Every structure is written in C-alpha cells, then in structure tokens.
Image (cartoon, chains in turn yellow, red):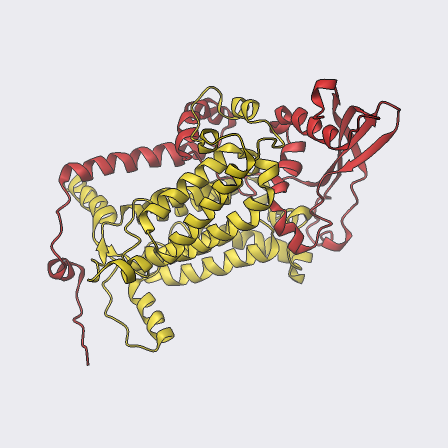
Length: 309
Length: 202
C-alpha cells in the first residue's frame, strides 16, 4: 500500500508540482526561431512542388495511400483551390511562429502555428523527417503551457503586473518525456542492431554521401575512430534518457547532449532535426542557472530563482 | 538595494498570487490523457518486430491523421543502408529519342545547397528507391513526363534507374576513406511507366 501511495505521490510531483515558467518560455523563443527558419528555409521554397494545386503528387491518391479512408486534419482543403491562398497559408504559419518566438499573442499564435504545421505535414507527408514529427509534437504540448508569462511581448504590452512565475509543468514534462523516449527507443533499436554492437555503424553512417555536411573529423577515417564514435554514441544516448533526470548529473548530461547534437549536425545534413533537439535541452535547465546567465548577460543582479523541483 | 526574498517551492506557492486550485478530477483527467498518450505514441514505436508494428499502425492511422501524434523513431537504427546511390529517369519520346533526368544529387551539391534543398531528399532520394515508395512512383513519372514533353514530341515512356555502389565491409584495422568511395556503377531499371495521353498536362 505504501508503495502505491509513494508511486502516486511521485507521479503527482513529477507532472503537477509547481515549476518555474522560465525554462519553457526560453524554449518557446528558441523553438519558435528554429520553426520559423524551418518554414522559411525548407517549406516555403517548395510550396509549389509540395502544396500547390498542381503539386508533384495529387492529394486524393496520396491521402488514400497514406491515411486510408480516415479523416485528415488539412486546412488547405478548406481554402479555395488557388495557389495564392496556399502560399498565404504558409506565410500565416511563418507569422504565427515569429509571433510565438517573440511572445506576441503567444497562446493564439502557438495554436495557429500548430494548426499550420499539422496541416502542412498532413498535406504532404512524403517530405517529413523525424525533426518535423518532433517539432509537431513539441508545438502540440506548447499549446497547453503558459509560455507567455516570461520573456514575452505580451508581458510588456498587455500586463500591468508580473504574472505568476510558477505553473503545473505537465506539458513541459511531456516534451521532456518525449525527448527522453526518443533516445530510449533509439538506444533499444541500436543495441539490437549488429552494426552498432560490432562498432561499424559510424563507419557506414559517415560514408552515406547524401548526408555530408561539413568536412568530417579525420579520426573517422580510422577503424579505431569509427568504433570509438559508435560506442560513444550508444553511451551518450543512454545518458540522455537516464542521467538527464537526476539534478546532480543533469547539467553535465545537458552539456554533453548539446555537444553531441552539434557534432551530429556538423557531420550530417538532417535539416532542422538537431536544432529542435538542442532547443529542448533548455527545458532541463535549472531556472537558477538561467537567471544567473541572464543576469551576467544583462549585467544586472539575478532575481532569486525558484527551484525547478 | 531592491533585495528579493529567496523562496523554496512550497514557500513560493504560499507567497504567490491567489489562483484557482486545480481540482482533483482535472488532474485525474490529465493523468489519463498523459497515460494514453505515452502508450499510444511511444510504446508502439518500441515494438521491434515489424509484424507487430504493421498490425498496430492501421489503428494509429486515424489518430495520426487528426492529431499528428503517431511517431516512429528509428534514426540510423537498428540497421543502416550499406550503400550509396542516386536515382535517374530515362524519358523516351515518340520519335525514339531519349533524355536522361537526374534526380537531385545531394552528394554533388555544396553544403549550403544540400541544406536548402533538404526537403527534396526524402521524396526524390528515399521514397523513389525504397519499397515503401512504390505506390508514389507513377505520379513522379507523370510529373517528369509532363515537364519534358512537348506537343511536337511527346514522352511515351519513363524508366526509373537505381544506380548504386555497396560500401565495403570495414576490416578490424582499416576502413575505406571517405574520399575514396566507389562510384555508383551498378544500375538497375526498377520501374517502367508507359505514358498515356491523359497523363500529360497540356
């Protein structure tokens, strides 16, 4: 009985114990910026190919193959069949993500950004990668978080008093859990694969030429370097769903994780995938650390922070 | 100096503005939503066996289409493609002439171009050659035929070619240098599309 009570208390504490809004508000800014870059840099240039009335793949058969006879959330289908409306819809998504980043009409702009991204993703799912899926999930959870309470124009323009700086962080926890789950699942898949356990995975990955981005480190041209990188990847991914939770080890794991993602981004062209993950590390940051960094930047005394846990 | 007090979480809760207390039933509801989400979105991805995955995914389709929560996370795992490749299309015209169309080659682009054109990679690189993309090939063939056809000389056939080179297995001591990768010398014509008059956008 005690165990059940303890588990319930732990569950309640994890999802509902008050936490500072600052990490998720900072996440909103960085995530909104990356989302804007994604929409402007990757979606907009190919709107004619993917989203226009005469797109490379007709919508009806595409929906049939992808979704069967199920209803699809696609606001583009509600618009008049004209490319200018569809182009305008993408610009609406861009505007919503910019508004979300700067914190203007934050809740509404987050919901609009999510509806736009879900529509675009559903309308042409053949262009999606894991980064798009992750961004969509993060946006969904951000819709439920009070991300306008700090670092937002809403605060400056529309509020006379500083809003409450604590909130029930279940939406933030869902993003964190999702993040950790991705690494957990990937780790499981990887340890089931022969090339990961025999140490050759990075050799093969770094020779897939379509992913090349910047010059690879020289040590990846040696057998030892490839094995070291393969097994290091397994260890780092293991840390990213285990030791990222305890407060004592969290900062070290976060720094390791950020360097790991930036290293991957250096080697592999995966679009905005790594950047969305880098932004997520902000959610694991201690609010006191955030405040001290901000204070150093603004050369003001740091406001006293409320512990995140 | 404007000295601000240091609070613990419980103290801060008492000091903070009065707010509506979340009811227990709301938290129970949220708990149910969270639990369902975790099961639906994540645990399905854990099914390592393709058979199980295929059985479950049809049930996920309605949810995915409406909310976008279905996710499959397999980044370079468990296995990886052990070859490099590029796709080409040979378009045959009614006068017997042929044209070679090369799909975007990310291995030949500058790094900036590769980033800029990244969204083409999934469609023209992965789906074109992967078995899961078979259903989408006719539309791509139609698109290419329309783009190169003219009223005076119509395209009559489009053939997709898969050009590849397997990566040699690494030995325990030596690995193949990234600068000496084999060219895509093996070619496989894996899809032939006969263009009918109705396929061409004119």
